[in-house]
Length: 212
Image (cartoon, rainbow, N blue to C red; front, top):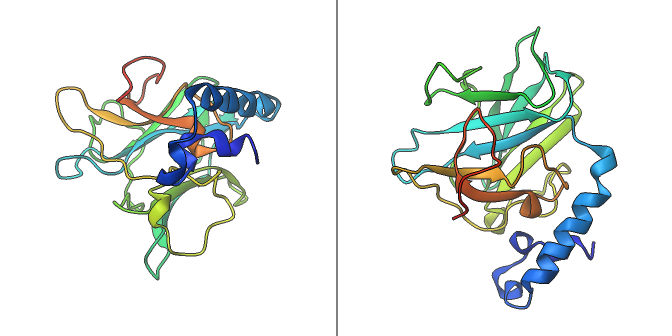
């Protein structure tokens, strides 16, 4: 719990002023080290839910840390403020196996040549919402919540830390950006330590680009 509190994206704005960069880096490093032996097999590696245009660049990218059969897995949307908490679901087709280090791109907006599956069925809404990835038995494997500061519904059991606390709008210009894991597959189970905003790389490695 002490280490989690050092992740700056986890904290209310009034608390961020007192957290030093050295403590933040140290805290996230310790937390990452503590989960290396329990590596998440497949993660939500990158996503865009709200851009500066007409929200016409939405996508979710999965990444496999280890070779995994994801047949029958589901990607599920969660609404943080509406009475109907479901933002839909989609099922990954049978016969889908990701090799270690492989990406799987889900979108209706991006170049079909790089997209693996339509995102039809899941709504990536602006505001306080989230996504979770579940295996074929319904066990939650990974999740991300954004704009948790405005979340009013009961907090789901699968939340990682306190999600991404503040609002993020992703820019649609000559250098698009997205919410990405700071390195492919990194998962401390604390969204605020794992995700940053950087130049997007849908269907390719996050290990490059710039931080904004």
